[in-house]
Every structure is written in C-alpha cells, then in structure tokens.
Length: 347
Ligand code: KG4
Ligand code: ZN
Image (cartoon, rainbow, N blue to C red; front, side):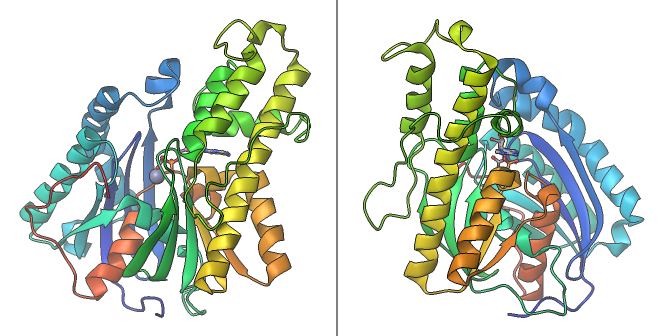
C-alpha cells in the first residue's frame, strides 16, 4: 500500500496512559503540531503510573493540550476532516477522558470519529518520517515495546495488522521501570537505566534470557526482574542489599539487565521475520528510544539483509501524531466509528 497523497487533516488525541497528547497531521504525514503533557512529576514518587492520578491529570490537561495543538497547527474546526482517538488498550479511566473529548468534538463539529488501537499506532509510528514518495515499508514485522506492551505484529498494511506474540507478564518497559526502582533510581526507569548502563559492563551479571517455547513469539520479563531483585538483595530477599553496592556495581547491574532485555527483543524480532517471511522490521514504543536496542537491532537486521525502520525517538514514547497518522489510513479507506464507541482496557 502506498502512502497517502491527499491532504486530509486529522486531529489526534491520546490519553491511554500517563501522557496527555494531541496533534494535527495532514496528508502523509505532515506533522503540523505535536503537543504532549507528561505526568512524570505526578507518578515519580510511586515508581509507576497510578491510574486514578493519571485520569485526573488528563482531565486537567486535555482541553489545553487540544487547544495548543490546534493553535500550533494554525487549524480551526473547518480545517479538521476527522477526530481520532486511542480507545484501546490502556488504563480504562484514562482512555475514557480522551474518548469523551473526541466524541464531544466529533459531535459538535460534525466530523467523523475514528477509534485507534494504541499498539497499532505505535506499530506504524516508524513510518511517520519516511519519504511519502518512497516505497511504503509494508509488509513488515512490527516490534512494539513500551511500558504497557511488548508485542510482535505482522503489519500487512496499516489497515491489516495481526498479533503474532506478546508479553505474558511484565512488559519490557515495565521491567525497566521496576529495575530502576530496585536500584533506587527515578521514574520512568528506561532513560535512567540507559544512562547508568553506559558506565557498566553488560557481561558482569549473568541474567536470564527467557525465550519460552522454541518457536514462541511471546515474551516474559518477570523472571529477569526477579533475578535482578535477588542479585541486589541476596537469594530470596527483597530488601537490605542496595546499600552494599558501589556505583560501579549498580552500573554493571543496569548494563547487564539492559543487555538481557535487548538480547530477547532482538532474538524474537528476527525469529518473527523468519517465521513470516517478510523482509522488513519496524520498531516503536517507549523502549524503542533505547540506544542499545536500536544499535543491536540495526546490526542484526543488517546481518540478515532485513530492512529496519526505527520510529524517530520523539515518536517512541506516547504521542498523538501516531494516532492521527494511523487514522488517516482508516479515513481514506472510508472507515470511521459511531459515537457509541467505548474505551476498552484490552485490545
Ligand atoms: O510508549 P510509552 O510512552 O508508554 C506506553 O505505551 O507504555 O512507553 C513508556 C515506557 C516506560 O516504561 C519507560 O521506562 C520506557 O518506555 N522507556 C525506555 C526509554 N525511554 C522510555 N526504556 C528503555 N530505554 C529508554 N531510553
Ligand atoms: Zn504507548
């Protein structure tokens, strides 16, 4: 499927987790605005996203974020062809805020409403900055790796996406966040672990690489997280060990943990490419911002002659550009949704 040529303009809204985001995107894909209000300060002291606090922050921020996105784009109601919103999967209370706002705007402005699957939006995010006149990257295996999801998908084209495998327990980003907590670091854990890992030895600690069944495209990171916990505190213990570690020890643990996650993600992505017989991989989601993962995937794909498109770092973490970008394909294909759509916690 080729990129979009027409200049449809979409207002995208994203509130599935802890980022309140709105964006205006025209055609394929002219990003006219991209506004994200993060909530790091709200959740930092809890070491993870607190759903009720996230919902409240969305209520407070969303109106202003939408207005800012329209203002930055120089767009008014008359310029918008459709309103798109993430309605699944995610934190139910959070999704409800975005879905309610999108329905209200679609009704008041008399525009089509388009519901978007958040994981599918991450899967197409690698295409946002590609040359619209160049070949489309589909079919591709998509690795979506974030705080809430670790999924492999077969993207035949943006309208036809099939789940190949996913996390059966903690998502990769969640493991980064929990390991950062274990190491007494801040939230979100991914960027902190990445920074610590730069000064550590990735082979210092022999952490497990859980592959599950031989051909499985599912992921499990909870064993790795527990291995880090016991490494820090001693076998079977959950506290008391951190103060005995030097800065060097902490950096080694961060580097070894990161290497274990990266090894699994790279192995499963290349396995998915082999199993589906496609020649392209695309990668998105917050953990896709990780330099070690980007470099390791690039090397593995180079070695196998597989084309790799990594989402631009600014579109890895949650944003509404990817929501509007995927919705543009739906709108062009004549797909929109009734005002009765509901938020859904699962896909
Ligand atoms: O895509 P995202 O913003 O939200 C979800 O859909 O979950 O991803 C957030 C996750 C967090 O767990 C965060 O720790 C992780 O992405 N993350 C990273 C990096 N930047 C963000 N993980 C590893 N390395 C990074 N540089
Ligand atoms: Zn996400």
